[in-house]
Image (cartoon, rainbow, N blue to C red; front, top):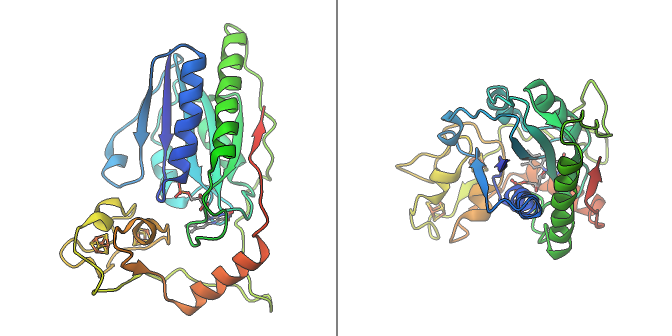
Length: 271
Ligand SMILES: Cc1cc2nc3c(=O)[nH]c(=O)nc-3n(C[C@H](O)[C@H](O)[C@H](O)COP(=O)(O)O)c2cc1C
Ligand code: SF4
Ligand code: SF4
């Protein structure tokens, strides 16, 4: 039996949650370690993944506008579940996970995984330092460990019998979350890109390497010729704090999110 942590994670909150779950699952099953598959960058998504009935795969994605991120779906459809035990996990920025978990559950089930449980955790919002600040924190990690132990228990108890279908919330057809201002006007931030403070940028190239869209110019890191999905990786992980979003529409959207969704949410587990 092998345990796998598979994730897309631009600002690393999903990675931390998925690895904590995988680690606890592995140790509860007395498996020495777990395998990691970080599919965040375009080059990582060139590798074809195939699993078999002997594998347990914890698959985590962030919630983007209430759904599984669009960019990961074509890749997800290439993964062969092969009857592996699947655990869909979504991580959201303290607003809501909406239909993302049921969508991930369906994508995994259609891809040949036997999903026996699922979970929604909270991570600091990609746009913000205040929404879900510092999440996942120690309390979240505790829940992630307990979840891993429960997964191991279900796997042990269900050897040779059909697995249970977890009771995952969400609606089909899946809906996108529509962000609107106080007058009900939708925010449109599709064309927004980060700006770079050239006085702070030391040209280290970190942002180029971590951008999930490969959108940043390797020769001039202040330019973003490709499509930006506002994942926050270059802003939050730039070692000198040189990148930010300065667009007024983006900042208005952020202010409303921080006003309306600041109260703490807790992780939820589904069996
Ligand atoms: C484009 C975009 C849309 C998002 N939409 C939502 C959302 O609908 N609900 C929510 O609570 N958080 C939302 N978030 C926040 C992320 O789900 C959250 O910060 C998550 O922890 C990021 O995961 P990562 O650190 O693995 O990248 C969104 C983030 C981005 C970049
Ligand atoms: S990560 Fe920051 S400092 Fe490094 S090249 Fe990108 S913007 Fe410049
Ligand atoms: S340029 Fe856009 S897509 Fe690329 S890392 Fe920055 S925020 Fe994410």
